[in-house]
Image (cartoon, helix red, strand yellow):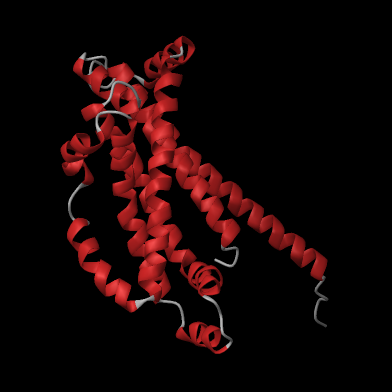
Length: 268
């Protein structure tokens, strides 16, 4: 006689299994950076690696606390985050709009594509001297530099997302007399969203890389400025504070975009 299967027990068992998997993933995620820090501390304290160049993490934490309590770190973080956010939005919004237009309309795609393909290989930082000449050494030049770096991955991924939409949806919309607004908001934008968000994810990583380099070259504040001036003065603990902050913000922004992705694309 077959044992009767209780759906409630089966559901509870599956739920517990998923919970264990979630805890295991969280433990693995936390364990890798902790292991690296412990290993770094041991190697630096034991003299296996030169503590002048790789100070122990405990000393870096102490320096971080000192910079934080003095208010200097808040100032650098605030200005860098403002530049990143402003440049990111300035690159993402036009990238999405132009990408949707290129994906929906072949004439626009053929007209704009050569410009995109010609400009994309040029590193934005290589254009920084020209950007400084045009926009000056103020905040605008930093924001434009970040926007230029973010724009290309967003526009290219948006075009790819629109092109991969099944043509049946576009045909149905045309047959029912959909307006241009409906094409953009109800077909192209939702259809391109999965690939578009990957471009935005890539863009946020590039924004962080760009802000550090831009602040090293032409700024008097910001995390990149802190890293460069600390390196120049051989204050390597302060330099590592800046590097770790950039790493932290990169991870945080990535988590936020992934959370947005889960919210907008719950089926993926």
